[in-house]
Length: 262
View (cartoon, rainbow, N blue to C red):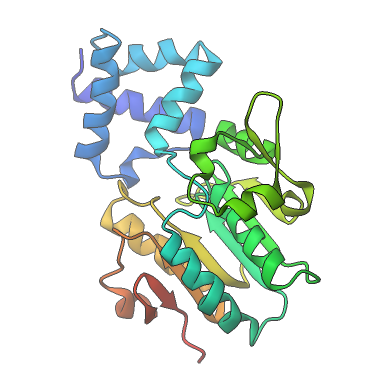
């Protein structure tokens, strides 16, 4: 029976098993997404569905991926990466010759590896730090492997594809060690775990779509505390922070928010 009691027990089990607390997400949207899964599985209970998918590692991984919406590709929104390459990184390097960058909600690793490519081209002899985190362990495993299908690198220039990837026997593309070695992957729950400090640049795009407004405000407050003075936060194209001044940011460029220098 898909009633309130069933839903509450499902949320408890999910939190205990994965650390995903659905109370911090917009409930109607998440409940609708999960109801669709339960109905498609021809079941009549959230808990029964959870118990069933929990028994199979691949099914459970697919379920968590569906919940956390892992959609990503290299140089996603190329105009924004062009801005990062030509303006954002050079600006940040005026005060920090070695940048500390965080790709939060990194999904399959496309974003942090894209950043690694940019940093390699801009400063070939400097080793910057790129931290890449996600909640989903299986997605992080794919990211660490660094092997991608053609459609996942479709937005990349042909010269970069040739220079930074090796073609595998099955026609996929493997990130070369010089790009991989810069990126440090780590599991992190943005809604529960403590945040590191001292970042020059934080990217968190297409992650907060189902977060409650309260959870978003807390997240952006935590990011502010994690940034160095003058550091920048970059959010997704549908995720403009309307109350950025109240949280403590200034607007640097559309979708880029700055921690004040003082």
